[in-house]
Image (cartoon, rainbow, N blue to C red):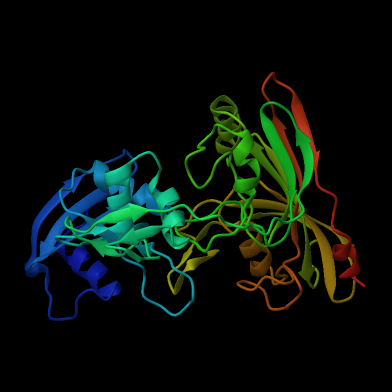
Length: 384
């Protein structure tokens, strides 16, 4: 993983941090470290500005993880993660560069982010929890409410915390199974699996399990070991303790779980049953999205047409891997995108017609269980 000053200049330009006047000779004080065996952090300066480039294809835009890696690299400055420029309406940080995913952070001298200052001053809670409290208006700086976690505070600023009563609009959530170790729900469309960073406060699946779990209870993702997109409904398994999290998490990592989705797609695939073996990578033109890419990560999906109408088909999808947006990208590549997919599809609808139908896992004690969320009635109605 050899990156030189020319690469650093190219990355700065792609983030719109410098113009053509900055050349490789302007890059100074380069220092490399490995916070983890799967990533590299490169610290450097351009004039009076200090930067860190984190090369890490496993980060997947997880802000907390990225900041942790930078801190573990031994930096002495306070850095802020820089979002990719663009007009997609989505905040994303990963820059595809030389078949890697690259993150850029800039020094914010003499000040600290409000969320970091809260962690250092009060402790007790995680950065993500403080981000949520900031967004709710519970944090005052010098007597004034600030709702941005990125707000810069000085050492002389007075920070105070207040607690507000938050009224959640709680959706109806069907529990498919529950014991002392797991809680399995039929996640409705529109429900987030968990909050990300300082998002606008709303009820999530993680909030549903939080009173019952000790796993990551002080984070914004208590009980979560896998995720479903907001617009995907169906089986979501959450855990109640660290031991079960390790057991289930290992199964997802080793691909010993079995997952089956159903989707309504536009048209009908040319082959009624087949395996799609096409790697997936970030789309450099819209880095918050993905595409079939020969240089991407391996991705396999087995599909079978269950019912076929004139304009649409009902398809079973069995992913062998768990790449982000895998099913949506694979079906779009075949020319039969999922109905209602606002990113990869062509046909608008009242929802995205993707449903996590079955999940098979081994629970503590060695019991193999299959959880099933009934196919929503609107799926077959959409074929008429």
